[in-house]
Length: 264
Length: 309
Image 1 (cartoon, rainbow over the protein chains, first blue to last red):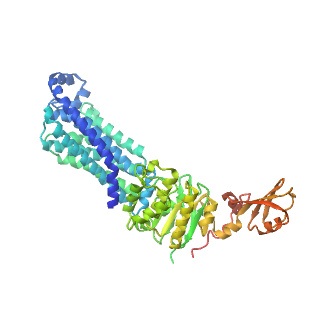
Image 2: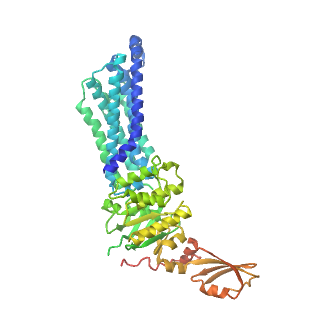
């Protein structure tokens, strides 16, 4: 089991380093833009108000130019979420389906290890990667924000980054489950990626589209963003919902992977 | 004593694709058992059920008396496996790869790993993606032998190996055999099976055609023999000689197909002045011909369905 875990963690290392750098660069970029955004605050606010309601509602209810509003709308709800989701879905899809398609899973499972151990160590490695990426994001915001007047209390940054990691974990979990069930990486990527796009849209334009409104609670983004990522600390219900998606995904992966034939 | 491998009416069907049907055979401890058949005959499917990568549709497979699905860890600890389509972690060096696999097993002596790698002339410091097909195959072989398994399951082990390394591999296998290791070797190459196996199962289209001692198999196989004489050969010179099935005459040269021992042919050939004799290894096709006849009639399956002893 220890050998498997070491392998699973090593498999993630390159990805985590690469995406960690990407996240810090994104944070640094947005922090650097902040002073000029704040300067043109009034213009921007007016511009947003003039957008069609379906679009402006994406930014609704936020003071877009305060540090909290800026970080939430520009980073946590858009670019940051995108980067973390790409990483998490890719890692989830690759975990079993990637090795299976490459053909390396055969030899790995010919060692005296259980399928469930392979599954568990890969899941642990993905969780660890997301924790690392969340930490890198938190540190980046705490370091790069203040020089540009983008200051948010550390506890709130940490809480938001926990949620960011959990968002990744929930969609990464879906990719992991689909990959472990089908052995097909493309299907896993498409299923989890498609789900992310659809549920993001449902949540984002739900307030303005009447018939979408009742569907909003079905979107993980509802449980990620509302009522606010950088205010009020962690919301237990949100944490539970996102963690729940990941746990259910893992159980599905376990049941399916234990039962099925491996592709040759 | 429990056989090391025990297949009983082992059947695997995939939708419309061909799997294996009702395979029954035993491999006792210490035997080198060949699994011979053309590509697509079900050799790899059988092997993948032994390692629990796929589950039988019906029937059972047991290794060391255990069900690989239930006791996978205990079974795998005693098996060395070389897949037919070897896929390794491309980014790792040979050494990193083998160290990873050593870490998944108990009791791998690194000095032994180095020893086999050296004998196979494997450069462990190079990245796997930079290795030739033959060198990748060596990594796979070291991985299969490294923990001194009780059973070696080798799917087409010599593909891509140059002849010299093949000899080293045969020597390694012989040492393991002396140690009492059981070997299950799948191949579509007749000479290889002839050379190293004690007994061979012949599979075709997912079914077991026959199980024979290698000696009987050789006796039964059709051999091709070219005789070069010092003058034009009489067309009917070898007609009626026991075992001769076909004779073709090209000037000074006679091409004979002979079933079974060559003795009668050689003694008859002694009447002529023989310049040269060339023999050709019997091919798999010849072997199937011996079992199915030219018309593909019902196979003679003696041995295939015998009760486990």
